[in-house]
Length: 434
Ligand code: SF4
Ligand code: SF4
Image (cartoon, rainbow, N blue to C red; front, side):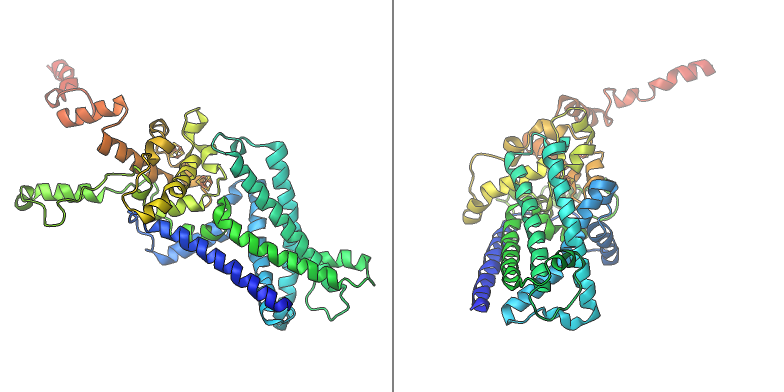
């Protein structure tokens, strides 16, 4: 009976998770091609992923908070092995199926127990930090109550997961049956109540733990903790090479090439291209590339980018973290309607209604945000693409930039001097020589 219930629960959980993932993937069909290669230099990508995603190298730049976060992540990886064992046991009616691995099973169970204890300590510290220490990046204006609630719910769930895991192991040690594996933490508690039969306690904790795993799996895609799943692929698909390099716009390059070719400069556009008027840059969510949308779903809202942003530090409106919270929100608000009707409009735009011009022009393009981001999000190209929309679609740029562009157009240089006056500065030298 238990096995049948478990099969039904498992099918429902994975079914609902599959439905959610399918829905999110359908949003990606609305996006554009990414301007940078994402699958070149596979060797370098694997090394980078091992270092940044699995090794947590960027997170560890903050030694204390970084180490605690890394412990939770590594623990999650180790404990997943135990979760897989529980699912196999539940589906096939086996008992501790991985114990057939012999000595390796001891390593799995010992590391699982040690990490469970470390995760409990880390989560308690995270909750204290969030509610008592309250660092600035957790209380910034873009952190809405729902974001804070999201973090609290997930931390509480992780704590319950770890307590039920240890509870299950304590019950297992005192259930009167044969013991496989080693359980150093649970053993401390189990030995103090030796003689009590805790078989029911073990089963209750087993069900609590696996139910929480399934709930956790289904909550993830709806929360900022989706990064647990997306961080590794997002880091792997990261843009390699110099971070400051920007792409030239394919549509503009094509236009320029056509204009420079005497055969095509005055020719009518080819059949089919006449009606197509491309939108330059990113004005709304359907203009972003699939990688930018993936970045927005991977953002952990940790605020490390905002913490180092010189614009934000000096009191400007810009918070790089907010750009990705806004992008994700915009897709949630518009995505479903856009899938049904590709011409749908609610009269709002990502740039203007969610992200303001003031925020975008505050960026110095220094790249500090990209350097710090633990999941390798590429802020600057996204910001530049939104600026491109403002400049090329709406002729909106700060007065200083407009003046510079006018000067380039008229004088061939950013300064307000005619090209014929360019050598005036040397006049005095020639006069002195004479
Ligand atoms: S590139 Fe822009 S958003 Fe990023 S840290 Fe520098 S100023 Fe801030
Ligand atoms: S963009 Fe990166 S650094 Fe910024 S909040 Fe998101 S995950 Fe953190």
